[in-house]
Image 1: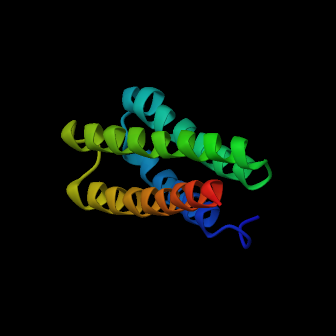
Image 2: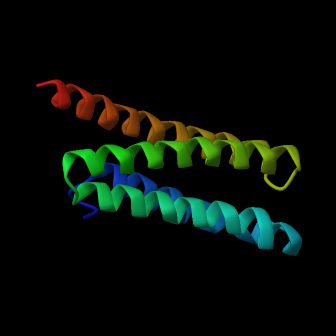
Length: 118
């Protein structure tokens, strides 16, 4: 799947990048914020994977769901930065990667809307 869907690979790499940050979280933050971020990224992977194998209507729903998860991740990373759990460099990197994933999802949504009109 990773070779077939570049978006899946981006999210996969994004998870690995976040996983490397988990040790920076305090125990309290690891049990709450880090866990929520991790579950959201895994859910994002799941949404994109399921979209790859579903019909047009379900695909659109899965991709919209994935897009909402990316927006939520941006909020969670901003919160981590403001709480000084991650430094500015990590925050900017995670923000950049999440924006890239968001743009790719936006392109997929746009292409689904376009093909829906055909």
